[in-house]
Length: 54
Image 1 (tube, rainbow, N blue to C red):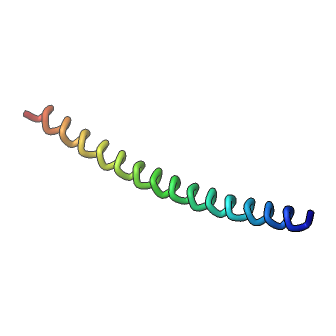
Image 2: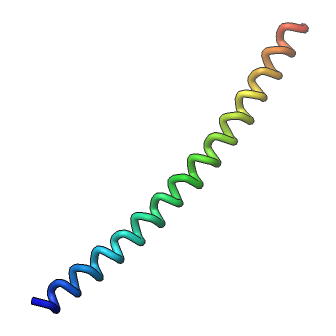
Image 3: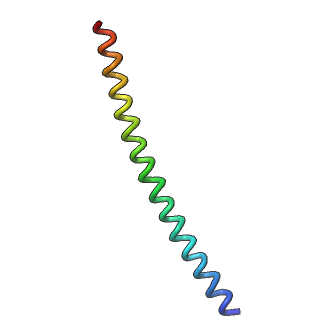
């Protein structure tokens, strides 16, 4: 009855919060990965430029 519905709502609320937290972590990781990819791209370009100038 009512207790089961209340319990289910609580479970959904907690799961929703956990999902939101996980999504935030994924977004932060993706942002960091994108920055590292830009840095690596710049380093590779600089390296190739130096090779061309040898």
